[in-house]
Length: 264
Image (cartoon, rainbow, N blue to C red):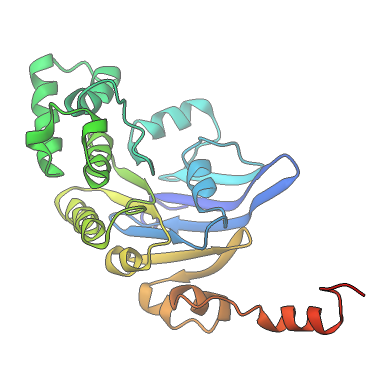
């Protein structure tokens, strides 16, 4: 894939566990500086796809490329991980240490910066997410929204080129979730960062996304701009974005009319 068109490329990706295939022949690219959202119902493989892209779960087939370079080798994957940030659904923060120490951890592990400079970077990242005055607190002392912001601050520590989110607003009230959406938009405006987010929260999807990909049965149901997704004629896509549950009453009535639901 040419660097000019895509910073991250996925081609014919297949992922599974034991005898179960989760992702089937999925292909897409992520363009520089865009917010690319992967959506779909629970259990469709969104998080599995995200983890496969960053090398947290093995793939059965296909390729993942970063700036045209395959990530199949351990060396390439290691270099790639130093250029990305990952915000996990539950934060994945270390509860035994303060927010400042959580954000400082990747700087201490992967750089040779002096301690005074690490402290300065930590303050900058906490300020970016609105937590400058909470750096002394431990994750267990924070609200859900603050923990999400703390996870973002840690993911930003090494100034990543790619930032991955797994359900960034999951479990949050609408006002707090909107604040996280605004933060994501501000990061894209203030930093040279490309964002890939996995979510099923429709308000977030249509507020932040430049392009949206919906998964269904391990494959791609639709991929396009939010306007193109809204214009889809695929019934399952429309049911999802309009929050319409599939009717099952007819099947139940037919089952009962045959006498299969009761005693003979």
